[in-house]
Length: 159
Picture 1 (cartoon, helix red, strand yellow):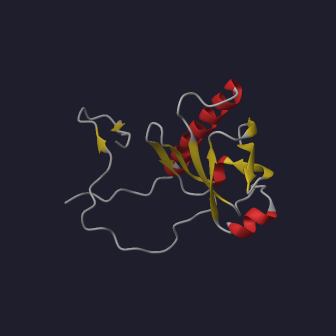
Picture 2 (cartoon, rainbow, N blue to C red):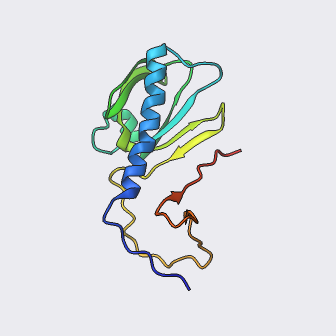
Picture 3 (tube, rainbow, N blue to C red):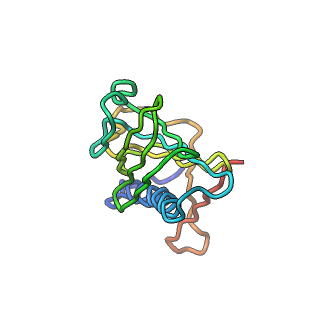
């Protein structure tokens, strides 16, 4: 029988989400600094179109009222990255557009060239619906056996 884990007073989930979004920022920043993508790398970035700080043309909001995926590959321009998000120029049906996307609005980042993918909860997304615990859940992180409070976490890349 296992001891119930108390609710944390430290928002670990939010901290991890923020750190992983910083990965997206760092990658995009390096692409902006280099002036283009190296090799076969390209990115699918999914984001909430109605999230705070998102600035995209109204025609795109009407077409994608909840979520949208953009591709950063061959035809993009003016990629600018700061601590809160990025802006990029893309064409949709041959109409040039500038999109401003905060990192908090991103729900997915995928680089198919190396099969690297990150998934996020949107900044305003909450899982408030009650649900029953799964019968087959085991603890994801296990304490290190030396008696310390260190938790071993393995991040594995999809193959």
